[in-house]
Length: 187
Image (cartoon, rainbow, N blue to C red; front, side):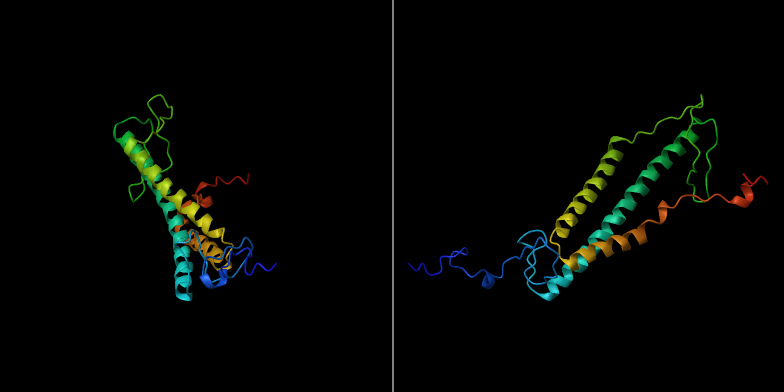
């Protein structure tokens, strides 16, 4: 009893369709790769190169967005400290550097207690929007990584490294000048 071509493919040769290839193992596939969905179907080398470059810059942009979020938070706290200092709500004058940024002195009320900073609704909305975009983009990058395509994974790794290189200068703490602060004691 010959059934002809009644195999698993239902009579269709899947290799001729040019569909998306999916692999749960490390691979170096270029053509017929679909990073997130079948609408993002890579059919030629140029489209794949564009995808690798695009993924690299998406990850760099995520790191830049993280930096923007940190800078925005610092700006909010700085503005709050300046407003508290100008309103006379501090018992100690804040350190102000050449750029006008308030230094690490805490905002103290007349009794010497720290006054908590709470962002306004609009400020918190902007903070939440930055987080939303960052979280969403990171999740998409995770989905791209789940293709297990070596080229795309290395684009993610190098994009993260380069993005951190160019946008993490602000995370280095202040270094105390030991010559000025040393009192002659060795402990």
